[in-house]
Length: 362
Image (cartoon, rainbow, N blue to C red; front, side, top):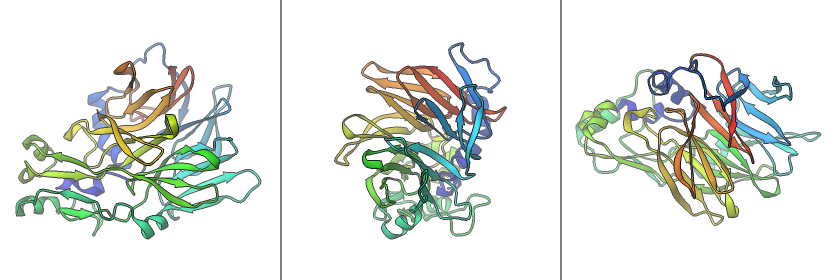
């Protein structure tokens, strides 16, 4: 099943998502040249997709595939640290430690760097943790209903250009994989990490110790004829395929909880429908799905019980909470978001101009 192959989904800092989205953005949300609403203000142009936005003492920071940048009071972007494989950036609760999630190996292991002025940088090898623990090693992915020989053959046909050995069998257990993606501050100088490759949320301690907070559940879908055809596997119609969850962001919620977005797995384009979700992880580690039906849920922000989700394939900023669920704004190519008392900061990935950091009223 070429388009359901795991190698087509996950873990190169939205590389696969962006590749799939080249035409989807044009047909689904229009070109970036479209006039934005008057309430939207571009506060910075970026050198690449704005994977994560962080706020520290009134200053906005973001990653763009080139490095860690900050937006000065004059509106210019200043490079703080050149880190080409940076996907996520966040600051500790006291603001003294900057954590960087390195989304691409770049010749080094997948890792999180803890940077503090005047101290040695701590590099946390998340791939080593995955090799030692592999939290989803007992989770079954792929066909869970007993695939026919024809369906099995389609599933196990590598997608064009897939490296040898990268296409999993029709049914498989969790693979050893790590892709540090987004971060959130925890108490005591620790951080929560959304590992898009490991399918889990990890705790990175202030001294670099790694432990698991929660494993996200598999994402099953029973393929209709149309979906199986769209995925290039017509003989798999009627089968149930359990995709990997692919957590894309983690944020602190109320009462010690965490909020997590998932893409999840498989073709992230509209081919299989709007399958992205938002989960809550309780203080005790219980995982509950709060909402689903997002088309490319790449980032989440929250403020006083209101939750905001970026939907990459529609450009929508969806807001939900006590007042229901509705579209707050449309920002073409939206991939990241951060909320403050009065504003939302949104990062985009563009195909027809510079990627941007956009500010709108919350």
